[in-house]
Length: 214
Length: 89
Image (cartoon, rainbow over all chains, first blue to last red; front, side):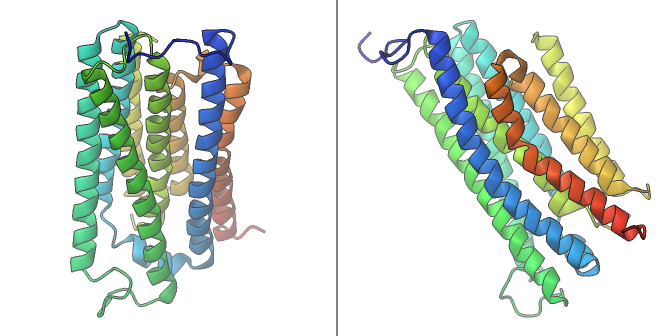
């Protein structure tokens, strides 16, 4: 079929070698991603060590229940992406598409909840630059800024993941991609999705839970 | 990985998430340590059961584990924080 690429391009001697090369490249990229988030989380931890009382004041304002629901949504979306991989191995394209749609919907729900969270923080005048901010200590205000950067960058990654998922869905729909011949495309995308989930697993306790009064 | 095992891993991940929240609002001592322990276990479940990292070559596994390196440092810093609060160092 014209739209489908060959399984092994000429620079690779086998499908296995190609898979290894793609995986190593993807993990290198994901390592740079986690370095970026690692630095941001380092900064959050530094703030916590330097100003424990002020950070506890800021953490108490965050909506940890909404963020907890978001964690569940992301974890479930990771499961659905894995189910899409299972369907691809069985050459069930319709099922792959369905699971990709479910994953995208869950990730979109994550973004909507995040939007609600930002909105309520705006209403509570917690965002930087707002007058009558209930947070008094400057480190607490800076921690809120850091929280916005970390969660904002993460939300951007979730958005990119949704775009990729819908892109694969569309390519499957128009026949430009076939499973399991191009399983590697879906597998690489799934790696990105899972790492975005893993990053959130650590962002959640770091920003929302540690320092919260019992 | 079979489908029942995958679903079991998912259920375990959800339980760990619930445990993390429960620990956060409980009066349990050393809460940050328990919370990060739960988060690390959750990440291991995602790596092992969803990504199926064990199917990859050792080199890929090294790259993958390197990506969680920074988070492990964070875990170490949390321990340092606790040590400081308990009057150590």
